[in-house]
Image (cartoon, rainbow, N blue to C red; front, top):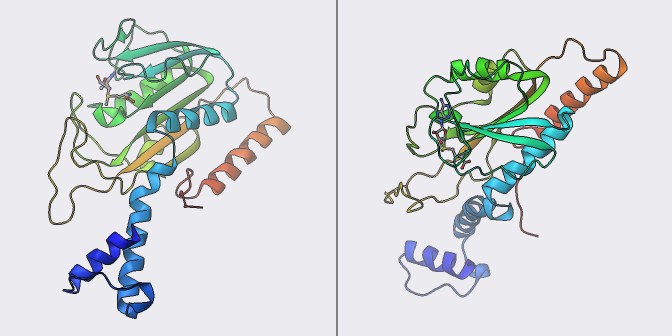
Length: 265
Ligand SMILES: C[S@@+](CC[C@H](N)C(=O)[O-])C[C@H]1O[C@@H](n2cnc3c(N)ncnc32)[C@H](O)[C@@H]1O
């Protein structure tokens, strides 16, 4: 890999031969090489993590565990192909989608589903759905309504990603926007997730893109929100305070990217 970078560097300097070694490079070339290595680390960062479905699934489980919700009914919104169907064995899983994407999917619109009783679910999750909801400001209160008091919710969506109509691509979000949409909940965490930030998606999937002079679309920033619905009957006092302190400590520790950065050992 370094040899390839040296070759590119040599080409940029108009040389046809690869320089003998790093020690032969000028300080300016060493700087260029370091920048190339830093870019490469960023581009390959996502490879140090599990695949998206597994990585986010693990994070949902972690946050669910911290919320204290241990079982009951879980609803996945927009779970095209039900990616999390078998992930929560302690829960009875349902999936709601505009389209019947799989057998057993409840067909409905999360911005308006009066057919589903209030407080029906202990947990409600979605991954890569909020950017596809036409009126997300109506979806959030509907999710809050469907949650039982003390219930948990988690949503992973996008701040910066290429256009991908599935079936329609409407929005991008900041963590603050998600917190605002769920202002009636107690926020556990609302953060950027930059694990795939410089991952190359050129030519991937059905929305293929051609490279341009800048290398094509390369800023992939996700956002996630986790929160719980207030429970007026919850135990007050020491345990409530401990839960609040724990949430604040988690928030502090997570900083910009709770998934951290992968570094080669
Ligand atoms: C990109 S796909 C989701 C992919 C899937 N969650 C995954 O992780 O692979 C977005 C889904 O959200 C659904 N959707 C969009 N708006 C919706 C709404 N208002 N109510 C329910 N589902 C909706 C779409 O039909 C689609 O199946």
